[in-house]
Length: 412
Image 1 (cartoon, one colour):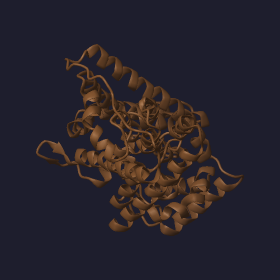
Image 2 (spheres, rainbow, N blue to C red):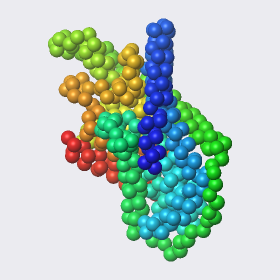
Image 3 (tube, rainbow, N blue to C red):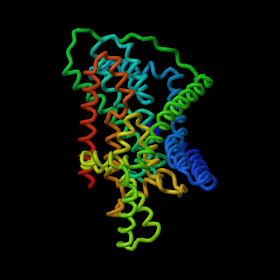
Image 4 (tube, rainbow, N blue to C red):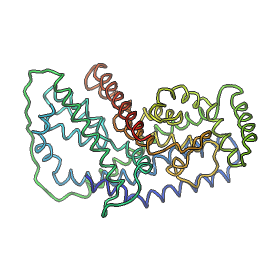
């Protein structure tokens, strides 16, 4: 797994830079050649900026599924279930639970559905409740962006420190899943007996046709499903970020211009201040400001608050939301979303937004939080009750908030 995470950061760097450069050039071309109109802004600042926040991570998704598919093809997964059965029993799980937990590294939804093979009710329920702690592929864009703000891109031998941090986040999710399972084991009661029965396939060379088909299907599903959600959310977000209550936007622009004159700011600084004040006065800004008191102790500002809300539809939408928000009002697209986030400063204090403390706090929040409404829906369907998904959402959100607050207090 460490080698897989290393590959995600090293092998994917060149194609990611190529995609970022191509999308940036396309956005600049459209801005320079299309007439000034709100539809042009919607296309470049909304749809294209948001969608670029997910397309750029396709190389990492492809590499992840390619390497995992190789493990499945050689017969590793079934043996892992057999080998881990005794350990899983200690935590109140089943050997088959390891299949769900490993599948959770791709997506929690099919992983939770795979628990139907677990006959013991208690073991199946515990597996369902803790599987979302396993970091899924949708969290890769969030981890990739934020790790760069916490860990420098240096190497120990041939292993990147960022790859070690990436693995640390996965191990943290695994530890949270197992410890939570242990707690549920002590709380839940059942008289059913536990057993494991499965067939171990023969070790064999991987059939590469199956591997490539798996990679293609997974990448296509990730792109199409995420793209559909992102397209809707970025359009709605652009509208909310570009418009506000009657008269609020002109008043914000005028106030920003007066403040810039008093501070004797240059043209670029003035435009940044105007963009920031207009965003605050918009519908999206008011929504972010509304929840800011709750998330302020974690080091999050109102823009991050907007991303937390939108990413509840799907975790990967966080990066797309940031790409959309930081593109509103800005015509310079030579920077990638990662560079834009790294350069963001508070318009008043001039301090960096994504400090190591804030970035680590946000990373821990996404490691532990239930940030996917589709997962809640499938838990409701599998348990045939709203009781368990609500319990699951409550303890995961509470753990995420507490861990983020402790991390921010520690590093601040």
